[in-house]
Length: 84
Image (cartoon, rainbow, N blue to C red):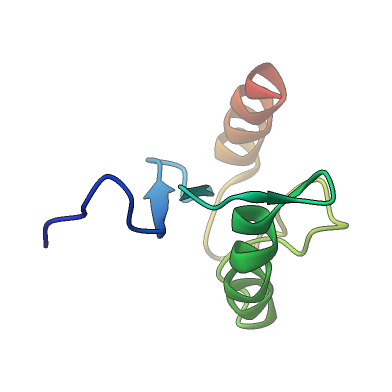
């Protein structure tokens, strides 16, 4: 899909740890708030509601014991802290 330079669009990036980052491009500012940020909020909330990403007010991911070992969790948490 080709995105024109002046066409509003949202980019989602998912890294190897499963973290998601969204970026809205080419949305004009309104009252000092980027409309792109407002546009991504419903998507991010829906992903959080479906437990695909952490909720906005939660700093770290929740882990299921059977999914990840404590050693792996410590490594992931360490990387996430370095990235913040």
